[in-house]
Length: 269
Image 1 (cartoon, rainbow, N blue to C red):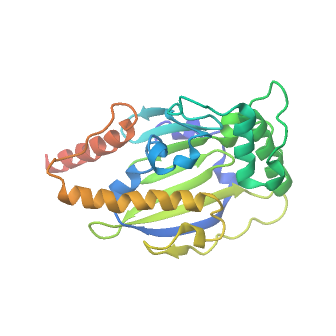
Image 2 (cartoon, rainbow, N blue to C red):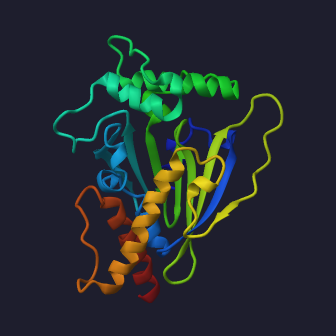
C-alpha cells in the first residue's frame, strides 16, 4: 500500500458509505480504460465546457514507488489554455454555482474572497445540512478538488469531500472492460448506515445519466466513453507501434505500463 495509509489517515474512508454503484461496459481493454482517468490534460478537448472552472494543464502529478500515483486537479481555476478573455472570479463563481443550484447564479462574491474559497464554503454548508456533520475543518482543496490516487493495477480512490469516489477496471474480453464507479458519502453520525445499493448496470451505448445519483458527472463520463472506442480503433489500424506520451502530463500512464512490464519481465525471467 506504500504511502496510502499515511496519506489517508485523516480522510477516514471507513466513515463513508456507498451511495451509488454503477457497472459500465467500456469499449476498450482495462488498461486503456484506466488510462482515460490518469491525467487531466484531456479536459480541453474532451470536456471543453469545463475549461473555465478546471485547471487541467496545471494539474499536479506525483508517483510514489511502483504501485501508487496521484493527481490533484483544481476546481474553480480557469484552464491555462484560456489565454484571452479569462473569466473573473465572479464569473467563475457563477458558473460553479449555476451547475448545481439556480439560487447560486448571480449571487455576489464577497470582496477579497476567491471563487474557489466561496464555492468550497458552499459545498461544506450544503453537505453539513444534508449529512448533519461539520466539514469546516477541511481545506479548500480537500473540499472541492479532484484528488485521485491510483493503486496498481486497477483501482482509483478519491478522498475529497465533493468528489468522493472509487473506480475499478476489470477485463471484459480482449477489447472491453467493466468499469465499477462508486460514489461515497459520509456515514450518519446517528442512526444506521444505509445498506450498499444494488449495482446499476450499463451497456456500452447506455448513458451514465440513466443511473440515479450520477448527477452532472454522468454526462462527463459519457464524453470519456466516446474517446475509448476511437482509441481502440486507432490501436488496431495505426502503423506506429506503441503510444506517444507526454513527459509530465502522461507520466502516470507511462508509470502504469512500466510497472506492468516489470512484473511481466520478472515472470518471464
